[in-house]
Amino acid sequence: MPASTKNPAGPGLTAMLIAQVRPACTVLLALALITGILYPLGMTAVIKVLFPRQAAGSPVRDALGAVRGSALIGQSFTGPQWFHGRPSATGTSPYDPTASGGSNLGPTNPALTAAVCERATALIQENPAHTGPVPIDLITASGSGLDPHLSPASALLQVPRVAAARGLDEDAIRLLVKSHVEPALFGVFGRPRVNVLQLNLSIETMARAAESPSRK
Image (tube, rainbow, N blue to C red; front, side, top):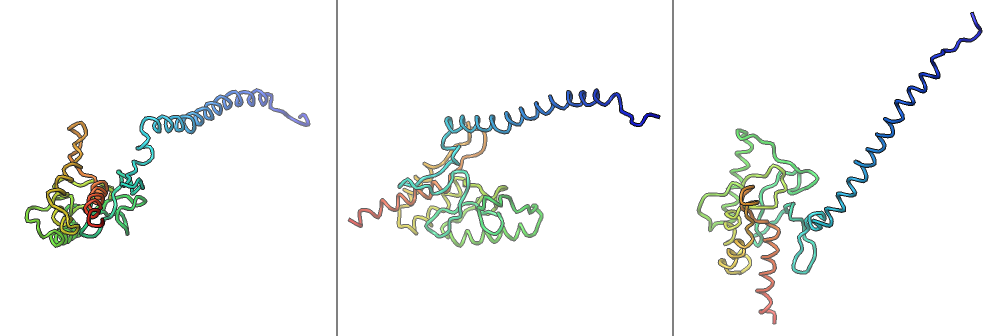
């Protein structure tokens, strides 16, 4: 038996493995570069050119030009002088974008019934002028908990309370609400809606304009 033995197929096997692995690694690196770097950077650049506001998060600015929030994420408004948005079930604080989600309570869950009844009672107490049915979107949370919109009926329900709190004319505020109604996309997708943040900023501007003459 010879002192040392060598596999005569060794060099050939190594060369075959290299021939198989090299193109695979080359394709992997090329696809990682294209799909992981070049494509995202290219799409980001195109979107910023075509849709600069949406690419920046759809910011909403007030009359002074300051960013007050996003048109895509709701905010918690409290106090009679503001229009209130939908209930939010995002963890410990409402409208928390880091904890987006619904309550996950089924329609037969007693906890959901109790929450809806409690919200309906509070809504009627806050808006005593309302005597009709309560819109469903004012007493139920959205699936994301971040819905920035209300139905027109839900916004109009709150007009008397906001008008009384700010000392403004109800008819003027109703017209303002109607001017903020966004139609369904292409008239088919979704329903007419009102962005609560944009409406509240317009109310703020209206109240400031009403106060200006008395300060002169």
